[in-house]
Length: 126
Image 1 (cartoon, rainbow, N blue to C red):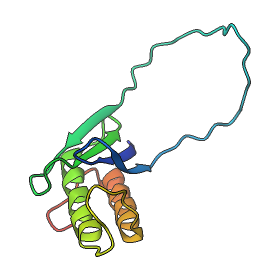
Image 2 (image 1 turned 90 degrees about the vertical axis):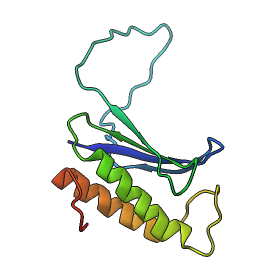
Image 3 (image 1 turned 60 degrees about the vertical axis):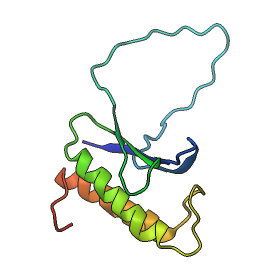
């Protein structure tokens, strides 16, 4: 199971934070010429987009792109909101609606994503 990306969007609809957790590496690079000979295949693997908004900050949206089998997405969204409150909003150099550039926010978000991928959910004490 995997969590692919986390996005934070402000109330004006601007992207203020993006983190790509799982980026598949391209093994082979190939150039194409026109017209392309493409054959599309249908796969059952899908991405689930989970939207979350917390009442404390109206308009801020936390978006997580994850594998559909990943459990605990709602708990992860609550944890991301908690990390945002603790490390971005309490930072005296951060102003609302501006991009999040806080190293402690990055570190804690990465550790929360690792815990979510391993355990699948957050307990009340995490």
